[in-house]
Image 1 (tube, rainbow, N blue to C red):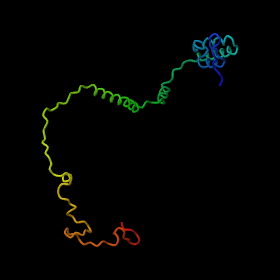
Image 2 (cartoon, one colour):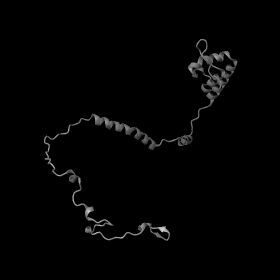
Image 3 (cartoon, rainbow, N blue to C red):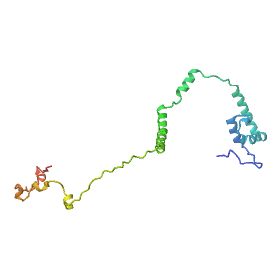
Length: 189
């Protein structure tokens, strides 16, 4: 890439290359008052010193005259409607989402500030405290920690028990559990 600007000259003034002068003429036209102030003096100096720069300046001046001679034509209403119809439209749903995204944190912050700044009233404390009499237990702690009432496991016979007092049925266990018996080579489920 070629260097378009050269470093400051010996007197602190910038120097402008012929390529940079061409860029200035293409972008701003031949009128030096339209050029950037930082490069204007150096570009005018180049035009005075260089015949190539003067030739480019004359071409830009001729182009400016041609462009100034073109009449200004107002666009037709149909063209205006067509251009405006093709222009991108804003989406109101997106605007609402943006507004909501900004408003929610602000509302939360305002709520916290109001909560912190609000005057707090102290809770009325009652002066009378109900007194409950606590008795002393004389039972051993294992009785207190045990289940209350009848122990169901002592009264219901378990399968295969040998205690006749509980009325255990005389059950002969099968050779194999029922779920492991085979029917036609498959396990029963």
